[in-house]
Length: 121
Ligand SMILES: [Cu+2]
Image (tube, rainbow, N blue to C red):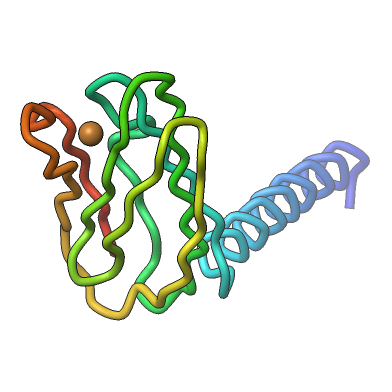
């Protein structure tokens, strides 16, 4: 085996090893049993407005109200229905037990613009 061939095999091996390690770590992150999510409400919006979790994950969902003016709700049926006063937060835990796209809203009159999507995939 020439030195050139040996070098080519070494490069190929390192490339495959790198891809394998990257693939292992990304799939480990995606299938973690517990995921922590924070949704922050402020004046008429949620941040982030789109959340993705994996089917079967346990979700620790913190709802934080950053508003200095008003109460906000987080209605994410069938998983969570909660509200928080100004500057307050609370955490609910549930299992993302059914795949789908779930809309979350604030049902206080005048807050119809506050919507987001919780995606279980
Ligand atoms: Cu609101």
